[in-house]
Length: 455
Image (cartoon, rainbow, N blue to C red; front, side, top):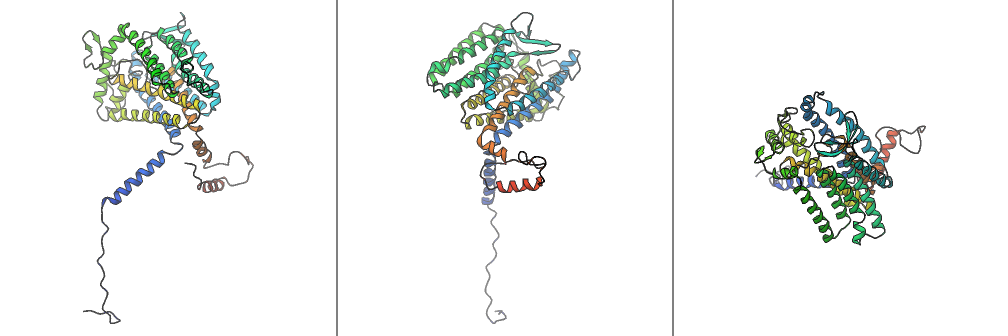
């Protein structure tokens, strides 16, 4: 037996054990990744970034698809191929200014604008019915010509007016503790909404009327309307809607096209609904390529407006349509989060109203393209061609951004963010001799110990 230098027998060493490649480490890694993702999702500025980033991405992607889907239509009308794109780009530029202006306005200014916007919308919607001023497009008398090729649809601004005015009205009644009485909850909100609906239905635009009805129900739901009262208003609206559908052959034909697979389904012409399904089906997983749609060559009516989602599915495939759906889902979640985390009644009602408006309109448009709902003639928010729809929608997105900034945790997180370059804004002025980079670094280190959310 070998011995050591000291004459003692060597101490036997235990064999080394290799670390077990079990699933514990992987589980810990997955759990850690989940916790980090959840922590990041719960940050104060998550809703702010989702609303701003999601809306801008939808708008930019919409501009690309409007350019692709409208070229053939423009050429068939003997217009330049980029005609509709340029008009949409101009509207998007104006809408971006409105978005950032609304996002910087204080809440009290939003409330002050409620009555002027409502009065202006009612005046313009009444002006539509004046002979010589109002004009008919696709059978609906809901447009006013502004000269040349520019037109405006006042009913689109009626959505924004109902959201702002209804939110301000309900907030004031809540402050006075009047919402526990059904007459104060319904009057004058429901009569004013019915007035707007009447002005819209005179022109025959039932699609926009459905969106306004959804906004009304959203406001009543957020105000805490009892189930029986909510069911009563819903029943009245359902009966009126059924009467309007039964008395219109065009609306009955749209209802009969649900689930149609042939353009001529009996006596009803379902050309648009069926070719929308054809466009989606031919797109596959990744689509035929941007600009390579076949259905937009005269087969699919309204390819750049109401049925732009079908062209998106054909050119960008399932991946493109799921991306659009994900962006709208993120926008809806962020709006619900803003409405649920605020203590201000006006912010809750207005954020809920805007979220209901955009979500309901997106569901109705996409459902019609998929053949799940009747064709209502409403555009896809922020995506379809149409400046009259884009401008108030972008202003409403600015409202959501302003409300997301008003959250105390988000406001603190925004205040902690300092520019990476340049001097500190505020005290010190431009004549200060301090090093801006060193000051920012020290500020970040000093604020790292605070538990106030993200920077």
